[in-house]
Image 1 (cartoon, protein in one colour):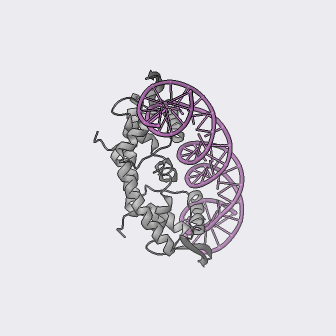
Image 2 (cartoon, helix red, strand yellow):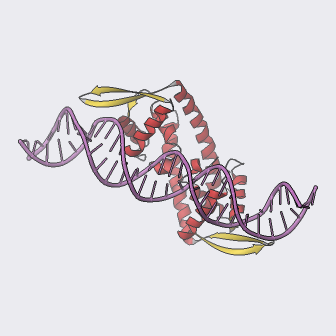
Image 3 (cartoon, chains in turn brown, purple, orange, cyan):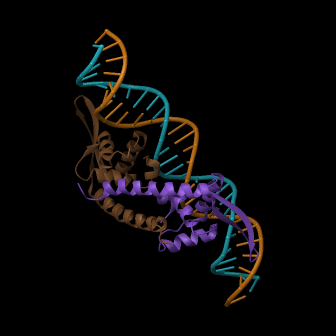
Length: 107
Length: 107
DNA sequence: ACTGTATATGTCGACTGTCTACTTATGAAT
DNA sequence: ATTCATAAGTAGACAGTCGACATATACAGT
């Protein structure tokens, strides 16, 4: 499943992945894959720009580090990010209720 | 709620609205509003082009009529449209399961 | 030594789709 | 006359995704 379908909910996904602790981009993609049972397979071309967006919005803070000779940018949820995540969860419920209600076959 | 959040699911919504019988664009928007408890408020600038898209894809067939002096384009689900709707429902379940699983707080 | 794979981040341009605002038009009510 | 509801549509700006590419390191296998 691509981010195109996930569009509008990618931020929530990213924020939720960071809830349990800081992670770097690559690890976020793998975490999302694992937590969704392989359904969510987001390309780097979608995730990295999104992470930068969240950073600009102050929902996450990123810092560089070197692990095993490889450079990593590790992201951490900010307080504003946690609040945003809480809002996203509420929106998600509203969203699924609204659409599920239309798609569900209660004529 | 805008179509921007609904993005990727608008087709499913439109198809589902037409399941109970033919409707014209304006009526589809109102039906969606009613069926979602007012949450789904889609602008004509999103809906009309989407309807044309679905028509080009042969998922709906549209024809003109005059009702009360006003021209209407009434859309009807095609067989391919019903099949597409069935696929969309499966996708919707996969989608909500995947994202809900990540957003839900089962660490 | 070389090749391939996994790790890790990032950019670019094409593409798709949404949104605001606007246009056109009729009928009914004020 | 004017305004509101109905009805359909378009144009241009804008945002976000995606495939492909570029870059770089570590490690396993041959």
